[in-house]
Image 1 (cartoon, rainbow, N blue to C red):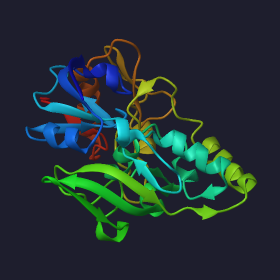
Image 2: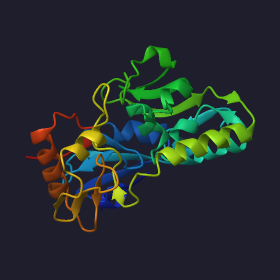
Image 3: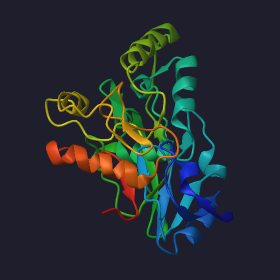
Image 4: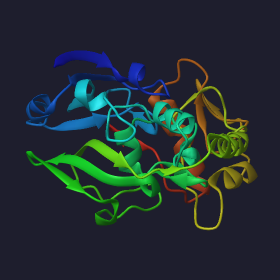
Length: 268
């Protein structure tokens, strides 16, 4: 296990975030030690906004055996979801096509039930293993309250690995579906972002509402509401978390939208 001081802007897809103590955990003994004091779990750093002042808790990132995976067996929570999606398609295993383009770790995807309108990870799960209060627990997906961008995992639990329930299907069919998913995501910005900032309200789309309210292109320093998709806040270069938060507050003065991102640290 390695412990070091880092700036979390280097570990998030949005590219903002202050200092923290990073614990690189490779096995269950490491995880038990790392969780003896207040902690946070860092996946691939997507869907996350970290304050410029950083966080006082130790930040745990899973590697080693937790990043190993076997598509037909256990998949470590530290493995990257895009790699799993692509490998499943190559092998004619269907169930993950709707997750194309989501830059999450497997554990992070499970915790927030990552997905698109084409499907969520909960729909492809057979079994979830997580570490909680000093012990490993295995449950089926039906035991957790999966919903829109949420799971029923206990507070403070750490997803360690999962098994998937994938169906055999011709690779050509899987790749055709993935092309449709990719085409539907073409309007998303290519600049640094944390993914969709707000949850879609029932029966509507947050991006559409933000566009209608005239927020596209609004800037605060190096942060901007994307001109390509209103539900993305992008880092134009050198943005601070404070600037990103200012845009969030400006939007929520007009629109009662619920934030989709996880927020670490203190904000006004």
